[in-house]
Length: 358
Image (cartoon, rainbow, N blue to C red; front, side, top):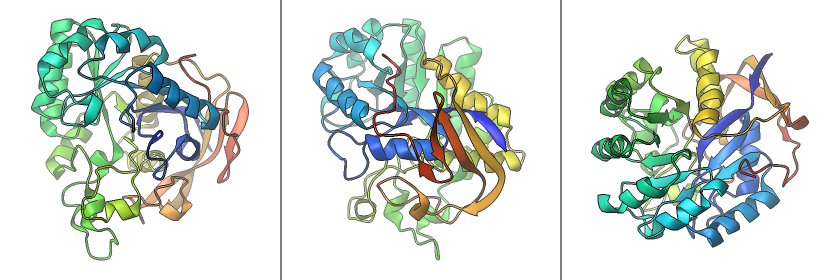
């Protein structure tokens, strides 16, 4: 039996408030515990988005009543809320800036809108950038100009990992994360083509950043030392939405990240030390998260099985890794001295989760 520390997922879309038919704080934290994750950081692009005191209060109230594992909530950067976000920083996981197109109050489609956030948000609190390719390069330039750390979300391309590597070598304060779907899936995967026998239609392959080429995936694996964190970007949508005429981008991933990575360990593509560093040590440091005393995860590392959505806890009801054969099953999770999960059953009650910023 393998014993791991409680894992941290720094990139989770809870979907509450506003889209609880996809997920909510109850179901997402059940999924977290079943996947060996004892703390999640929630993204702010909900409906309404979390960008001021009232919307932060709304999200945290839901989390307090429903969350079964520990958590923190990101604030979203908007064109007019730099002063408000800076004042709320102690209560938030950090600031999320959408430098590529998004919607509503979080749309930052002009670099002059970035400046007040880089100027005002406390330097000891993390800024996370949704930025791709050249926009990512601009975000790294801002980190250098303002001499403050930035964390790049869900990198996927060879050019991105090589640029981050070069920036780190120059002493620029940049960290980054990669998601399992960008490590294990490509544009040629049966998922993205709706391959014969896969049972997956084209809309289910929609994700942002998009799936990349095998060359890009190989570059990520070749530069694991540059990658600071593994994160799911858990972004659940229902099957009806994914199979519709305008499928929204995003994959669920909370319960599949650990077995996928443990399978890579069994294949000598990475080590257990790599996994712990990128799913516990580094996220804890980068996001200034507190200790979780008496917290650990037990895994049967010899268990081999197939991933099936019917066995998962997410409300969305599907997985891009349906039918994948993996190695390593979570058997028990202890969170702050209490048995929170055992042999397929979530034992932590709603509301047991603790706000990491309190």
